[in-house]
Length: 269
Image (cartoon, rainbow, N blue to C red):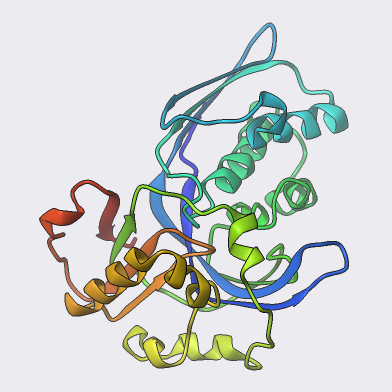
């Protein structure tokens, strides 16, 4: 079984308070984008996990695909599998690649072993794996609240927009990003502004992480400014960085000095 875990971008991101459990409450709109990893799950005599593509650091026990497998093994006694992950989506990029891999592992195992679970039934498992894992079980525009794991659908269609994603070859850890954030209340019902054309979002929708991270990493601000110079309707950092994205009405050619970065561009389906 082969699956293609896709990335997401954040359209607006507001950190509104520090929670008693150490996490933060956020308000954001998650939107799926087609930059994808490749995930293969096959029955096996013992559990195996292998990777290719971008290097994945850390111990197996902390890998989200492995943890997703263990959750279903403990709850539904599924058999051993070989999971191979070809990593394409950069890590520490604010694109939710690891969370997508975990969510698609849940889906793949569910389908492989024909478990009587809908995608909605998988949400409690996803919520144990990461704050934005649950989003990838719906993979449609959603407003995220609490830790980002409480979701509500929103009518938003960016089909036909040309999206540019620029990852400047360094990641930003969630810990670093939140260490510099100062929570503040978001405007009530700010998500309604997303019903306006993207060209209006520059003045009304923002990402709270930009204030501190653009000071620490001026290159991110430079990339965002250049996207606007090249005609973006809207440009922003995704998540807690470090990817910067731009939405355009028509296809653009990326400048040569971005050739050394990891990039994705294309029309949204």
